[in-house]
Picture 1 (cartoon, rainbow, N blue to C red):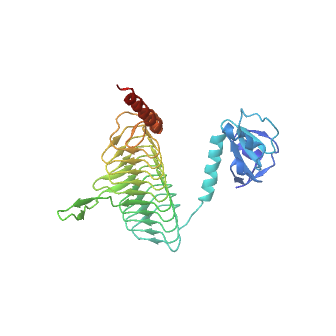
Picture 2 (cartoon, rainbow, N blue to C red):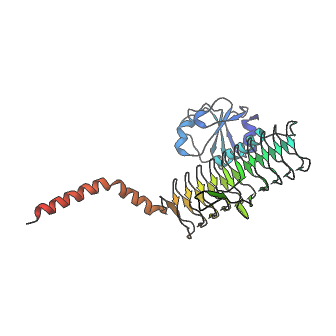
Picture 3 (cartoon, rainbow, N blue to C red):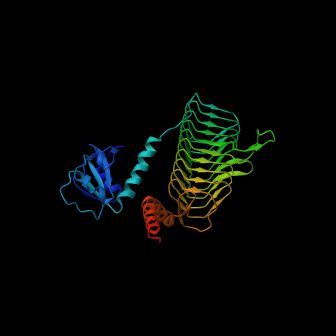
Length: 344
C-alpha cells in the first residue's frame, strides 16, 4: 500500500500540516519509526517521541499543539487512535488477499465450497462440510465431517476443526487452535481405573468470534459448547465441555474454564484466571489476572481478584495487610513480651 500524506489526510478528513507529497508505505510505532512510515500519537505520555520520531507522518488529535518543532508531517484528526485502527484494518485486509484453491488441497466431493473461498496447500475438507462465501482457509487446516463455516471467516494454518462444529460469519481462528476435541469426561470404576464417557455434542461459535493461537474449545458431552457473538479469546485458553461464553466477553491468555460453567455477556477476564466447573458468572463481571473463581457470581458488573475470588477492593486491602504481617507479628511479640514482664 502506498499513499501520499495529502491523500491520506483527505481520506481521513483530517487537517494536513507539512508536505502533502510525502509518500507513506508502512505503519510503525512512533518510537520505532522510519522513513515512509505512518505513526500515531494518542496518549500524551508518548508526546516526547513525536519530536524525535523518524516516521514520515504522524496522526494526532486536532487538539494537539506541538511544544517544539516536529520534523514529521502531521495529520490532525478527531480521534487519532480510531483513525489509525481503521488504517491497520485496511493493511490487514491487503495481507489477507488470498484466493483460489490449492491443487494440493483435499476436498471431498460432498463438501460445499461457496464462491470466493481460499483453500491453502494441504488443507483437508471432509465429507458434508460447507465453507461460506469469502472465507479463507490457510495451509494445513483440517475441517472435519459436516463442519459448517460461515461467510468471511479466516482460519489460519494448522487449525483443526472436528466434526459437526459450527462457525458463524466473520470468525477468526488463529494457528494451532483445536475446535471440537473431546471434553474431559471419564467415569471412575471400582478398580480405580476410568472409563471414557462419549462426547456426543458439538461446538458452536456465533458470528465474529475470534480465538487466539493454540487454544482449545472442547465439544459438549451432550448438547453444545457455545461461544456467543463477538467474544474474543486469547492464546492458550482452555474452554471445557458444555461451557457457554457470553457475547462480547474477552478472555486473556492461559485462562481455563472448567466444564458446564456459564460466563455472562460483556465480561473481562485477565490472564491465567481459572473457573471452577458448574458455576454461573453474571454479566459484566471483571477478573484480575490469576483469579481463582471457585463459585457462582450473581451480582452484575463487579470486579474480582484473588484465589479464591473476592471483591476487588477488599482483595487489595487484604493484600496490603498481608504484606505487613511480618511487621505486625513483630509488634505483637513485643507487646506480648511487655505484658509478660509487667506481670507481678
